[in-house]
Length: 524
Image 1 (cartoon, rainbow, N blue to C red):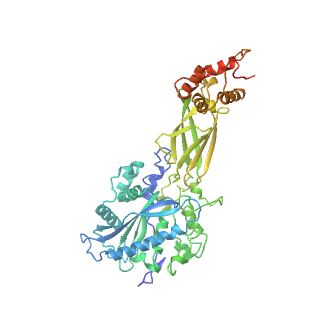
Image 2: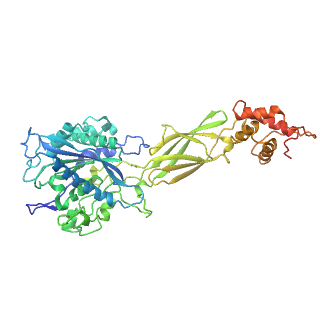
Image 3: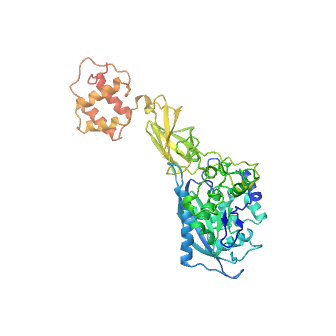
């Protein structure tokens, strides 16, 4: 809520609704259920993570309306500073120890249009339908995004609907926002269109789709700067206006709206004169602005178990191992997949208010960054790196190292750093040579013995211990009554060749069994 410098009229900061257009998206879940990262249309679902910002300063080129104002460097820097001040307000109020809210900025641009926003008014108001022309002109002029972006086919039935109602320009906006997100490597993105105005223009501050709002230059400066940019960005992540509730009381029809990814009520604080989504007209500046619990909840700042971790990134982990096995010598290769389960979007499809624009795909920005196991074995991501919420992998197992055929898979996620464990009992096919297979670390000892780095006695004592404790299994061998004089040279040679991988385990076992037979190794 703001009061114009030369007017007593209260100006509501509205978020424009295209509910009837975007409703079809809600039934368009054609994607693979394992694709849980934000897609083309999921550009600003909640206020956790990193957000790419593109500021576009718009000015008339005289092709439509006569040009009244042009930007200069100092005016742009002032508006940019006030926008950043508003966004830093949200960074500073991020309430959790885990995760973050951080804004990253692409270089600002000037975009020309046939619309002079300061004079394109009807009955004293800038009309929302004129915004289409302004947006298309400036995006085309700056070369940001494309109305034919193939990623918009994420939900095939959306494009025909948008074209039918003349709103395909939204695809251009989302394409630009996705370009910003891709370039900056962020989770989300917002495009901010800023026409230059010397005074307040009623109706020239509103969000018109996910990931984009228009904000005239005058509105960036009022009350010390930053308040209105902060207010408008909150709409990008699902927060609703509470001005009517503040002015007219809790019984007003507009009071108590539900919105956002978690579909929560807007307020628990009335009056809201000093809160960012309430009436801010008389507030001296951002430092004294409050954020109601309702607004925090709509933005995704919810921690129901009070562990200082936002619920939206506390993802359950699902691990699946394939029954298909591939033999690789003495090892078995098993394919698997792991997924971070997103917290379900709770938006109500039957709700007919403005938040129908809020597209609700189950989404997480968290990522798998490590998969390990007990016993330790080789786990490789199929695509070469663990860096997304869904990963396929292969496990290479030496079956002799399994305890009761059990393996524990341990998964680490990026945001919380937690280790999630799942234990499996494997139905592995044991090869014929498994009974005499030897743990790989014993090869080191055999190599050192063959090279003379450890004496015969140390190696023999070690082998006797391993046999008696079942770590090395040999066939029943009858020992001679008399002991031979020392270890035959060929047994030591075998040990060296085996350590170098030149002969199989069975040949090395033959040598061990011979030492038992001639009573150099004693197992009774």
